[in-house]
Image 1 (cartoon, one colour):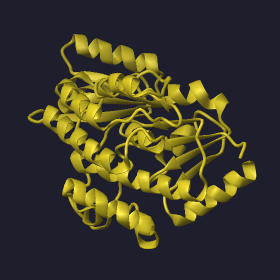
Image 2: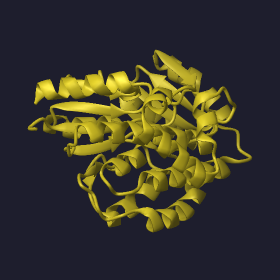
Image 3: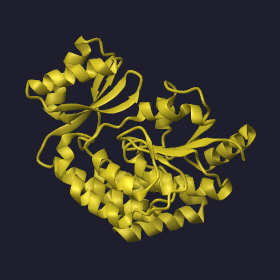
Amino acid sequence: MSIKCAFLFPGQGSQAVGMGQDFFNHSDIAKQMISDASARTGIDFENLLFEENDKLEKTEYTQPAILLVSAIAHKLFENELPMKPVYALGHSLGEFSALVSVGAIDAIDAVELVNLRGKLMAEACAGQDVGMLVSLGLDDTVVEEICDTQREAGLKVWPVNYNAAGQIVIAGIKPDLEVLAPILKEAKAKRAMLLNMSVASHCPLLESAIAPLAAKLTEMLKDEFIAPVVSNVTAKTYKTKEEALDLLPKQLVSPVLYKQSIANFDDDVDCYVEFGHGGVLKGLNRKSTTKPHFVVSDMASLATAIEEIAKLG
């Protein structure tokens, strides 16, 4: 097949009770992966994913749940349509799902890894009233200048997710973010709203998580990339374990350059395939590209994606 696809994987914030249920109901592969992930981590993923609970919003559970569903979606797609992507790209946590898709880490190993990542992030933020806030409608430079000025005044706020044109997420101490919101609105932000997040991702508050995550990465990563992965830190590709070991720990405390990554490589692909619940990245990509974008989130969308990609090829 001559079609050139990029594989995309969502991050934290895309979770919802019921995600992956259709895969589980109709696929023995999905059942086995959920069973294996539960055995490895001690997390009851059937309960976590399919029953109302108060754990799914906690980052140590959110991260492995999202990755597991994304890995299942990709595995089922791959079984039906084996293809090598031009590159794989994930948003924050999604970079670890991207690594699974290119063979750089085993899926169940990755579930264990991001469960640890979530615990380390929660521990780094423990005892601090942290949060994240989305700013809509302002240029990057305006948000950056406002955050710089407020940090000089003693606030702990950092722009951390460059999602799309006019959309930046800011992380920091929640009371400081509450101070920041009216300042952003005064600068003509269309919206400045606190998000439902239990950690402050991609900022210096997570410094303590770097060393233990790096140690686990050294143990679990393989040097078997079948395709390059785009780094959130650099918006450039990498394809070796050595590069991954350098970049992934830095990702904890560095901004996610998502929109820059799409811009850098949009000309190299014919379409995007997003694996996992919610279609969050499809929403972001509407502002960045006109290329077709397929979301694989259940059996019906899996069949549709395969059918439509075949037409493109």
